[in-house]
Image (cartoon, each protein chain N blue to C red):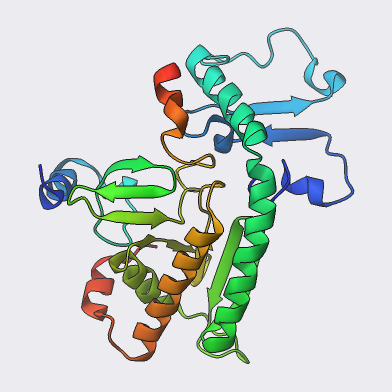
Length: 66
Length: 195
């Protein structure tokens, strides 16, 4: 599924009440301080406070541990 | 939690709270909250604070690990040190662009306020949205907040390095340059109004 497909699928089924959109991004994965979209473009994330990722993303395999 | 360079924001002041509410940052992504207070405040009766999801094992374990990582990796110290560095770099950026009316924050909780004019301090929501959009195009995720939608919020992971802060500031610099030269596609910006 490409990014446009994911975003258009979201538009079809998710209420706008659940959206604040600043630009068209669909995050496919994240690690450390970086987000990666479905086109494999990497972004430095200064918005981690919103996702409460204070310790970063995918910390040392902690997800697997839990 | 830890974002301001101390465990809690109130730690920056000489005060002792009666009760502390720990919200979403406690679980680092998993849903959990807590109320911490003196025994005489909480023990007002048996079963008066029972909730179906209280003590959920998965969320509790996530919170436990989150606290351990904050301590072991000295992330609160990093927030204090690199937050001060970030603020210093942004103060330098402020000297270059009149639209930056104020830079403020503690640790890695930072705001950049955009104004039309530094004397009137008139909020500049349109320019704020444009800078955030351009940052996205340049590989930096940053949002804006505030009652006038004119404050760029900077709340990165507490693990952020000085090299990454240099990159972030260079992208912000480029975005402001592009705003100055009218080379940001405002039609695209308008499609994503934020709030």
